[in-house]
Length: 394
Image 1 (cartoon, helix red, strand yellow):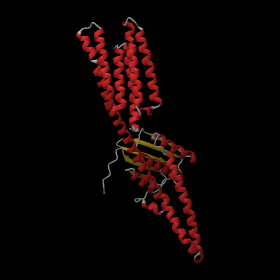
Image 2 (tube, one colour; image 1 turned 180 degrees about the vertical axis):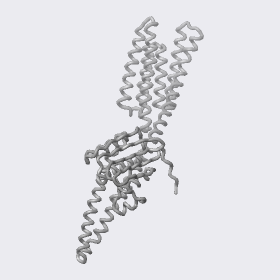
Image 3 (cartoon, helix red, strand yellow; image 1 turned 180 degrees about the horizontal axis):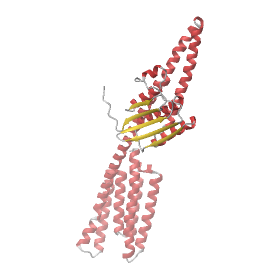
Image 4 (cartoon, helix red, strand yellow; image 1 turned 135 degrees about the vertical axis):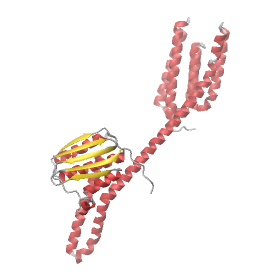
């Protein structure tokens, strides 16, 4: 049976943990034997066997974790190591520790099918314990202690199988959560790009297409109209190219994998270098959602552009604060203007910058305010809830 990738990852990781834990327990028992046994060569032999087999197992699982897909070879080799420890330790405590670890490794690799491994190990353990009790002149307490070791093989195997299953389920759940988040982010990104293209480039290209369709019939009948239409097509094509360039620039300016303050700093620095106007930025340590930070970064870029192009500003101050709401404030010392009651008036005058910022603030779940007067500079402030309210189905 072919194991899924998540099972391979979990089995390889837990297998390495079992090998290390078994080695630590067995080496501790063998190390004690160096001091209490009359012949220390037995303990030294155990140390060598355990060290070699553990190192080989760790290297195998690290370099070729896919070996857990065919665990029979690993189980057979590890069982041979158990027999080697049995011979080296002459049935001492290190053997029982190592055998319990082998059953745990079998539980990791085989799951509950490891019962075919645990039972023989337990039978071997009882056989060894019986031989030891016959050779020792021991009290009943020692006999109970020796006979308690073999059942530990089965218990260790079951515990390892259960732990592996739990880890696999956890990994599966984590993968599902990450995959769902990636899909949601991808869908949100596609929707955002579609909205951007629809609101800017597609509208411009639609107007260009209408003018281009009317151009051939006007060439012969109305040359002056044809000339105007040709000029419209030219201006529209340049406008579409500019909008596409601005869209790409906006996407590049906002890097969701970086801190939001770094994104704002990059936008301000870019505008200051291109215009020569000083831009001062003060930010709070905030981390808004990806869609909110994108809209805020575009609002900031548009506000800076307006301040430079229309406000003749010499200095611009940008402030980002957070209390119960996230507030982005852009103030310039330019010439200012008379703010209309209805921003749609600006759209009729072909001034779409503020109208676009209002729409972006609405898309982020917030509101945008503009304060200005002739000769008094301009302040643009967008306010977004820290916790965005859930949208109700219409």
